[in-house]
Length: 356
Image 1: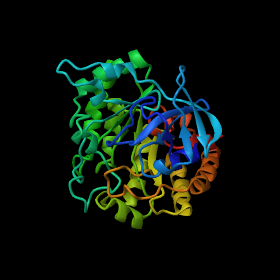
Image 2: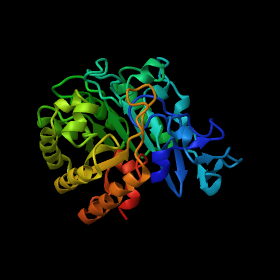
Image 3: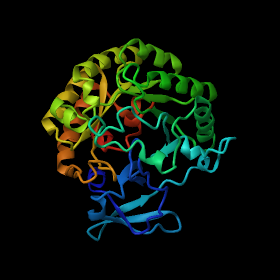
Image 4: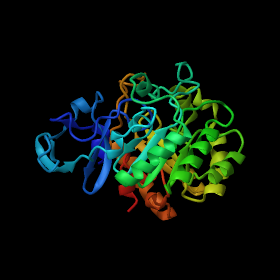
């Protein structure tokens, strides 16, 4: 899984499984692949994937493909089916798939606000971000209302057995940084269906928002560092780096006090320039606070300034994930124990395989 997520996969049949996610937040230019009983997100349309030694055959009548490395059979894989809720529309004609999408095999995900105050300014925007791409392509809408989210969430649970939900947002302002949007969204979803929710935003300027988000129905919280050193953060995400690491660390403490140990997480993108040692040092600090550091390989997205940036070598990822998995195990922080979110899903990283 570590090698597949770093190197990508070439498909003999490009139409296998669900369509490739292009643009937007989360794992773009990926497909969900089930291998060894686990669903993982694997890059398909990136520059690196076009050179991958891994290939997948056309699925047979049972939907099973054979994966090969340099022509040698490795294993069989399957692609999750297209969710049934994708066939529905709201009363005003918006496809449900434009409001929320299926990630991996059982996670509903939505970007409530498909924009960001920094996106239009490349001197401030995150260089890896593609949040507006799917909007420009007509695959989503700018602002999902609480009523739309509740309607789609109920259908996803009833028709496709979705187990938890991720609600993220582009940053709308430099005060609550999206916390208010998350609150109204979670409140509506929880009124419609009993679905565990992870909210994701930058640290708000006032720690009281953590209690408000919890009260609104958010079960887990993600505040994503992406990079762990000030030098890399300033280069890769010049605007977001305006929220210093010190503020994140203080916010993590305040959030854990509200949501509980293991229910606060952060996304860390390995391969942007931080050393393995720097990543592991920050992860050790985070684990001590009760925060789950979800380390994933950086995968470049077509159309972004980092489209040609290489993905990390699988050996680099193992050098991080193996000791990190041991740290998490020793601390009793397990992704499976989380109520909701990216780390619980685990499809974008092989980290959970190293927790054992």
